[in-house]
Image (cartoon, rainbow, N blue to C red; front, side):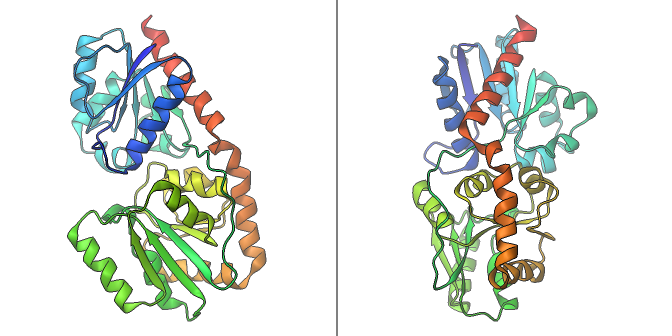
Length: 319
């Protein structure tokens, strides 16, 4: 496929995971000679193939492409909301997958959420990071980073709630991410007034967010639902250990044997993990070592190879 349309429901100008993924994939395919466009919906323009992010929200583009390009290769990349919310109840999402030549998931636990017939055409493409930053946390305070937009699926205030179970004064939580509702904005500001160890910085440029992750002792990923968080890839490439809710999307990124999980929604359990990282240098080092073993999965070269292979497979059955 030389001409490829990447469809993502993200609005231009917004900093969302889907849009970051679409732009990164476009660059990887262009570097291999592809002519790639990134749009929020396919308008019938020239395309030998399509990569659609989000089975339900890209459904109209999927149907339009399959009707007008019956021999074109079609790849659908599944998000967390696809896998863990939409597919069980959305006929549109399921129909999109029926039309797909290949399905992409972002971590290796995701296949378990799919019917056996769909698993056969599903491939894992781990998201990568090309950052050259390295882990360099401060000496005077134990810093916990939270990086993600403030929305319900992210359980965004779990880390600050954990502070109530930590008596240590030398622990702080730095929270990066845009509030996606007035309610979330008000709650973040209430937490800052209530808890002096918490700072919400709002939306910052991507390079600045990576800088905060590098300058923190740990990153907390507290999501209730994830397709495969790119921020985990970034933290692992930097060398910052991750404390994550034990959900399929996080386990698929960090591995089943990783020791930095806590029960979703359990602030006390998260506090225990943070406390162990503060008090036990060996435990903190163990998490760094375990994450380091996953580092090759998240290299740009690995993502580029996997993505190009999926595109080639999608084109092959319809030649």
